[in-house]
Image (cartoon, rainbow, N blue to C red):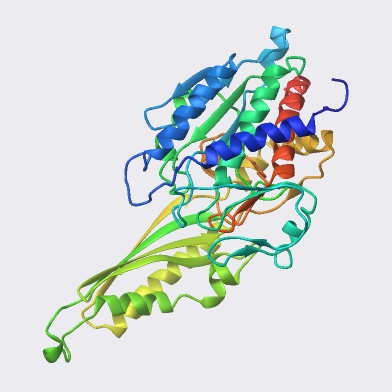
Length: 427
């Protein structure tokens, strides 16, 4: 193990494919309307399976918390104890749940070997068309795993779980790779944002961590949106429509007017890169009372403050249009941009770049137009960049993942461990 790491590509891809398909078939859809952690029972099913598999690998201390966190610890194998003690514990994290925006029941992954570069027909009139997806066209001749068009696939984030598990097995089976102590964290309810308030930080020893929850290779991410969940409540006045003149205040109409005030140029479908947005998630109610849920995103704290102020202004404008009605805005932070904290620990990113170079991968930084558990871990004092998984079209019935990208992610994890094990002189 002098300069570069050598891998059996076919063996690695076979392991990844088998694991990912097995995990994808377990329904782990989370439910934002539930207050429990986890919000759904299916997440326990995957968590318990992973505990069994981790125990079967040997050499690991494995815990399953009361809130469905799987935490596994692999000790350092460096014989020089004084050297090993200088190294930080390195964590790798992925989430158990899948989005509720599309059904995750009865997932049927389809393996497309030696992809011919053409249109892939899915169910319900959907297709994967390389003319519309540049990264799909780049997969010609490679193996893809895609949904059948009836459900999501679950690459977000079961591809990440499969990659971590496969890398972990490789490291255990190759003791010649000197490594620091490693922690594995599989968390519930990332999609709802309800899992990390129950995060068992008292169990965690990682100084640095990497989430494996990104998109195409070779993208990595160290910055994300500042994110708020905003609930807006509308109260009206009820009276018979025949006697309504000057009295009726229609809360449902108030909610509709409020939603219509959102600038169309600042919606998810009209923005990209570093542009933030407002997004209506759900609206419900009647003439007496209505409720609207929004998510609001911006890369800067100042931009987020501007957006919350704008929503308050929309509320006052609606009240002015509907005398006697009231509008109440409740804004709560979900997570913050993690870049500032990661910048304070440059070694965590330097080592990531070096690990990519070690396996011939030219990593590219890209902002996350969303968030990961890494944002919360970073807030907790554990700087946590995000690594690609190879998945595309997340949260949709046209989701797919590249097996070559999955293999690259697993190799990158192994390379990271290798380099952290060799970097004791930096501490």
